[in-house]
Length: 312
Image (cartoon, rainbow, N blue to C red; front, side, top):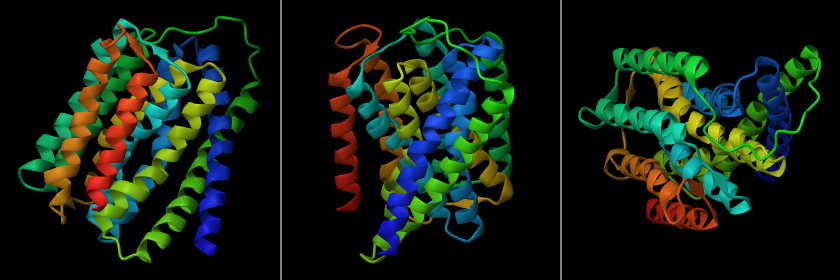
C-alpha cells in the first residue's frame, strides 16, 4: 500500500513542479531576451535531468552500476518514444533549420560519444566523464551565444513579466518538487517491481527511466497546453544531452561505471541510438519541418515494442 501512495504522491508533485518550472522558464526567456528553446534546453532541461543525476550517482556509489546506466539509457529512450510521442499527439510542432543543424546533431554526437566510450570495454572511466562534461560546457556556451529559434512560436502576444523574486521562487519550487516527486515515484515503482523479482537493469530501463522521465512529460504537456512548444521540444532534446553528458559524465567522474548486464550493450544502447536518429527523418516525412500525430504514433509504437522485448 505504501508503494502505491508513493507513486500517487510523486505524480502530484511532478505535475505541480512542471507547472512552476515552466512559468519560471518562460519568464526567464523574457527577462534575458533569449529564445525560449534555449531556456528549455538549459534551465528546464537541467532541472528535469536532476532526478537522473541523483539516481545515477547514488546507484553507482551504492554498487548498482546497471541502475545508473540503465536509468539514463532508458530515460533517453522514454523521452523520445514516450514523452515526445505524447507531446506531439497533443499538438504538432513546427521545426526551424537550427533544430537539425545544431540541436539534433549535438544530441546524436553525445549519444555516439557515449556509445564509443562504453561499448568496447564496458566501462565509463573518469577521463571519459571529463571529456563528456567539457563537451557539454562548450555546447552550452555556443547555445547561449549563438543559438537562434528552432521552433515556430505560436504566439508573440505580450506577457507580463514576474518580479525576479517570484521567478526565482517558481524555479526553486519547481526543481524541488520535480526532484521530490521523482524520488517518491521511483521508490514506489521499484518497491512494486522488486515484488515481482525483476532485475536491476530491467527496473532501470523501464520503471526507473519512466519515473525519471515524468518531469519531462509533465513540463512538456504543460508547455503544450500553454502553447509553449519551443519549451517542450527544447526541454526534451536538452534533457537527452544533459542525461548523457552531465549525468553520466559527472557520475563517472565520481566513480567509474562498469556494465554488469550485457543486455545494456547488446540491446538497450542500440534502441537509444535508433530512437535518437529517427527524430530527423520524422521531422521531414510526411510533411517537411514538422512533427505531427502520425510521428507520435510511430514513436509510441516503437517505445511499447522496446518495453515488451526488454521485459520478456
